Image: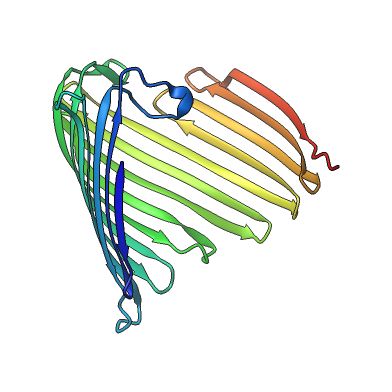
Length: 270
């Protein structure tokens, strides 16, 4: 069930209230949810006034939300309380600060890194995230972010960049960089993700895209190359190659998985 209201007098005000109940006999064929036998309650409010008197700033936004799950017996398993402040600039850039107070009841231990186990228990964390997004009209765009906060009984620090670099009107790169350092009583570890997507547009109906990504959590490199051609309107040819490689051995990374797919979709007209 959901209730919502909006008002936009030179800005944007919003209030949204939702409550969702999912029983233990839920059939996933009628719709996907992340878990069953829960009751989810969600409240969100936003106030976004425009500032015509300030030349460089288009809009300010304050937003708050509470999202929690209980097990249909009133015992809360997850709760996220979030506050957000955002500045929209006239040049298309955005600055955002986000604070999240989270509670999680962990029923089973899990292993976020080799030989590091998070035990069963109740955990409450406070996380602060700052980001700056460059407008898409720039040749170099994307979002730079940094966050610092709790991670179960310890702390986590994250720095990242995800964006787009327009090399030429037909060729672009999309780098993705993420560095995470975790300090907890069970052990310290670092998780890094380095990747880049390249796209070459050969014509309005034909392009080649390639993605290469390294993940330090399992020391693997994944690559994917895709060719797409709309040879007639509504009909496409796809050629895709992908593989996964292990970087723990000596020399060039060895292949763990490899896939080659050719797909033709033709639109029949009557």
